[in-house]
Image (cartoon, rainbow, N blue to C red; front, side, top):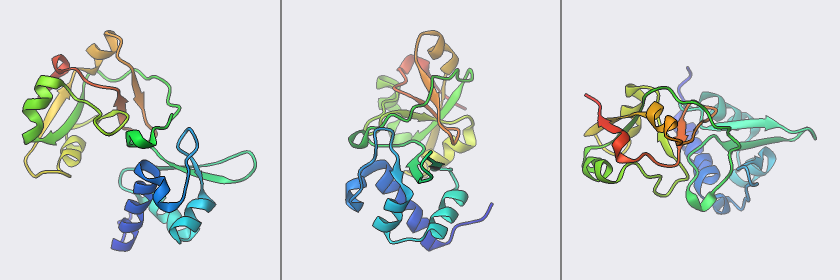
Length: 185
């Protein structure tokens, strides 16, 4: 996998900010499913299509999806992670999760999570990983002291909780009650 340059990482972060949290900061409006014309994004951010293509193709988490519509125009959206203020319908069908998924978080959050469960907070969904290494990476963005929680997603699904699988392999659900959480050792 190609590593992005510092400038490309900055561009990727700016695109994520615009498509996930603050489209108005670039003068853009997302459609109901989070899509915006690629041409509009390029003009708003002052980048070229080639620069965008490199960032989309080599993003370490496949954060962005591009599609061509019937009229021949290309559109882009964030794969997941939208804040509640930019609530979008990703159009993801319900999916049957594996028996267990994982969530990494700073240790300082552990007590409240074990009491209240995992909540989406400012986002639309709780994000879950298929493996411990990814959960550690995600949790490690906020702290070096990270714990990993095992989520009994099979039991949750059997109890009626709904899961979705994003295009880049992140599992999404509305919440995880504490009874489905254990500390992964």
